[in-house]
Length: 133
Image (cartoon, rainbow, N blue to C red; front, top):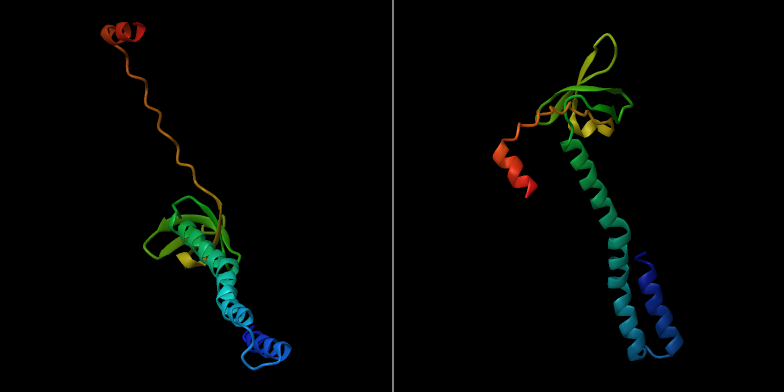
């Protein structure tokens, strides 16, 4: 990529016939490099940062009961979560392995904690009459 810029400058001086070139060619050649940097930012750097943020958010949302796959291919259920580590239970024999959070490749199934349903409170006659109005 960096070899392209000097070659374009040489080509522009050869086509014009003089060493200075015309003003439009010089301006275009000076704008080419920053334009390439901007394009590289939007097509390479920005999507990678977005992907890293999504992965960090996924790892931070790790909770007890989640079924995860590690980067090594181990599948299991999370049974304990600490600051930078978690404990994974992998088999029916209850084999437990401690991993760093960065070892999580994906969360296969989030644990849905049972929602406690509160019984509806009985309404008094005053509340019932205000609802009817």
